[in-house]
Length: 152
Image 1 (cartoon, one colour):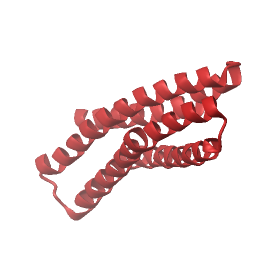
Image 2 (tube, one colour; image 1 turned 180 degrees about the vertical axis):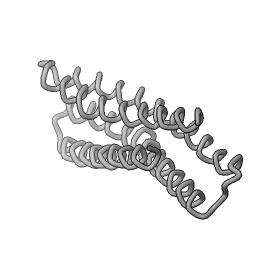
Image 3 (cartoon, rainbow, N blue to C red; image 1 turned 135 degrees about the horizontal axis):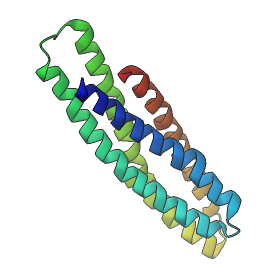
């Protein structure tokens, strides 16, 4: 009983951090700060912190869900299917984090600096990568809703 509540709390922390940073804080920075470069720098740092929180939540939650099947005496088919479904959701959300934080974010940061300094067509590449990262972040945020609904 306690373990299921901890799993739910971890999933809520994970999803809530995604929704807060991506849906509230980052847009507010761009609406509030007159310097878009500064807003982008702060948002980038917040997304990096959120990514590390995602990694921790994914590992801890994944281990807890995995162990719930190992320790459960009720290894019936519905329990195994739910466990497999939860692990798939966690893995998908983790993949989104890894792709964004270690794949796209470094490229976006490099392009942002070059595009702002040189005012070249690199701005278009920055926009495409930024749009792709935003889409992945949205997918991850929707997966978090699904994860919470499955954990209930």
